Length: 466
Image (cartoon, rainbow, N blue to C red; front, side, top):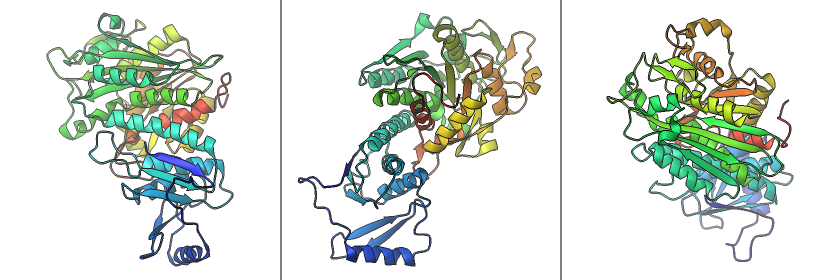
C-alpha cells in the first residue's frame, strides 16, 4: 500500500506544497460554477494551469458530504493521478473525522492493483492537509489493508491457488500479527469433515481446514467467522458451462474476507475474540469426484444426499458450522460465501443477500455494511420450503428445488444450533466488471470492510444491536 500522510504543516523534507491562495481559489470556484454536476460525489473536474505551479488541479465532488461521498471522491482522485505522481489534497475547514476516514479509504481502495500486476500502485505518496485525524487514518489503513489482502487472494489464479497454497498464505499473514494463531488441518485430521473430503476428493490438490484465532486479553465476546474457500469450482460431476466457470477463481472470496477481517481486528487491537474458519477445497472433475446421489456424513454426524455437485459450497460450510457449534461454542456465527447465482438475479451486482433468524444481528450487520459501502438486503428464512429438503436416504438433500438463495440458507441453518447466526450470500458483489466508485475491476474483497465495521462496534461484551 502506498503512503498517506495527514499534516497541517508539511514536512521540511517534503516537496514544496503550494497553498490554495486567493487566485487559485477564484479559478477553482469559477470552474466549479461553470461545470454542471461538478459537486457530484466521485466527479473529478480538471483545472489545467500550464506554465504555472501547480500545473494541474483536481476538483473532487463530495456530494452530500457523507462518508460514502468522501470515499468516492478519494477513489476518483487517485485514479486521476499518474502512477509516479505525489498527490496533495487540501481539505476545507471543519471536515469530520468520518469524512477523513472515507477519503483515505477511497484513496487506498481506488488505488489498488493486484500485487502481481506489472504496474505499480497509482501513487507513491499522498498528503492530506488541513485535518490532523490520525485515528481516522489508522482505521482507514487497517480496513484498506484487509480489503487489499482479500482482493489479492481472490485475484490470484487458481493455477497457483491450491488449498495448500492458500493455507500457506494465511499462515504467513498471521505470522506478521502478534497475538494471531493459526491451525491448519489436513489428511487424517479431516476424518470427521465428510463434506470437505467429498468436495475436495476429485482434485489432485487435497483439501485443508484452517482455523485462525485473534484472542485479546479480557475479551468476553466470541465471534466466529466462516468463509467458503473453494479455490476453483468446475461444478464437479454437475459441471458448469464454460462462461459460468471462467471466474471461479473467486469462489473462495468468503474465505478471503473472513481471514482479512480477523487480521484487521488484530491490526486495530479490537477487544473481541474472533475465530475465522475456512474450509479450503478445489471442486474438480475426476474419477474420484463425488457424485449426485452420494450420501455425505458431516462433522456433526448428520447426513446429506448430494443432488448437485455444483452446490458444493454449502457442503463444506456445513462442516465448518458443525465444528463451530461443537468445539468453539461462540456467542454468534457469521458466514460469508459466494454461494448462489440466484443472489445476483434477485439483488443485482452491488448487494449481498442476508439471512438471519435474529433481527437485531441482521440490523447491526446491515448498518455496518451501509457504513462500509457494502450493501446487503435481508431475505426470509421461510419454513414453507422445508418439505423440499426431505430425502429418502439421508437427513436432507443438498440442493432442493425452490428459491436458490433461500434453500441454501435453510440448508446451512441446520448446522449451527444457536439463534445468533447470519449468512451472507455475496457471490454477485464479490467481483466488479469495471471500476465502480471505490471498487476496482476484479475481486472486490467484499465483506472484509463490513465485518471490520461490525467487529469495531462491539465493546468486548455486548453484541452491537442487542
